[in-house]
Image (tube, rainbow, N blue to C red):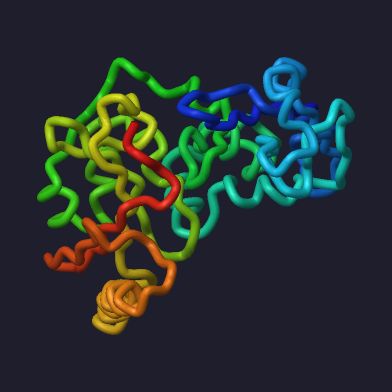
Length: 259
């Protein structure tokens, strides 16, 4: 089963088809040949950036080139966008039944559930599956009060939460965008021109015990402290620890700016 995906890159306010990723066997990707080829249109558009510090490569290990690069399994940069940790578990429960028979789960999640991962890359085929006509909005209070159960609540309500679980790590996280109306939308569901703020919402990991909750609370104070020391950290303007049945840490995203 041959598989192919298009990697898009966000450059200067626009998404570009940057690279075609082809695997010789989408059933056993780790053992298959994977070819990473920059799109010719992308290379032509940025030809003046070749071999400069400003070339829009998808990875430092894959500089702009007319030649494809082969590897066994995925090239390393893919592991930064493929769902992992708590996000992978949640997505497998929700969408695993849609996976074609025999297809590698990781390849399926890349093609289905990466419309808006952290960073400037996304999978085109995944984004195209989002129903852009549906833009369910949620009040911040709903997210705060339902904590890590919010995602299941939203799915059960019929919401199309494209990109909301695109963050890595073992702690449950949501990627949300705040619109001009003050409501929250799943990332990739709201056009950038209507975004007022981009949020990474983090919840207590593991079973959400009191110790897990305190770890999250400590993380909030840690960010505030190192910011006061003048060290480079996430923006503390807007950084908030919300308390409900379980705490949630609301962090301004470091990889997004309001258009």
